[in-house]
Image (tube, rainbow, N blue to C red; front, side, top):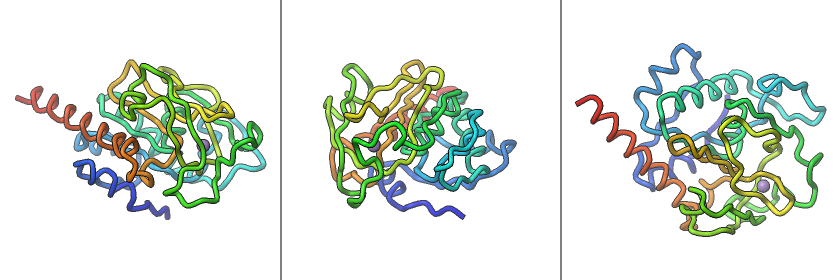
Length: 225
Ligand code: MN
């Protein structure tokens, strides 16, 4: 059984949204779930089963939850088909990447040991900076090209999924955020924004998700009318 921190719910609620937690259900139930949502926030969690992107397990792969992987991959694809806004956090950003055919670095220290991506400081404390590409949705939301973030990830994006663009990097070159410019609001961040909402730029991420969800709900109502 996985536990979900209340920080996600608080962050969405503080931004004016109504958070609901989804149980990992079989794929055939996905459409029924998605119909009732205006947006999706994917949470952090364990490593992703490498078979989902066609790789063998690395010796340092952490524990995985294959059923949750399948549920979340299906959820992301269903959300995309319906044009739902998506804010994907930490593992969620990795799920977003795999759902679009991307792959992951299974053990980040293989790639970089310059920066501790599994910080020892508390989650409310940033531990490394990220540089954000100009002219991106993320740069507009956080109103900056450089912000400080926390870091609790064992894995990272390797090959990018279709339609995703890398838009932020830590100083060791690890991809720290992605967006899908051709889609509805779709942003992935590798950091735990939900633990940093005392910072206006991080709270703004959740406000943007809720805005996009309200916009989507408005469009859906127009269609139904
Ligand atoms: Mn990091």
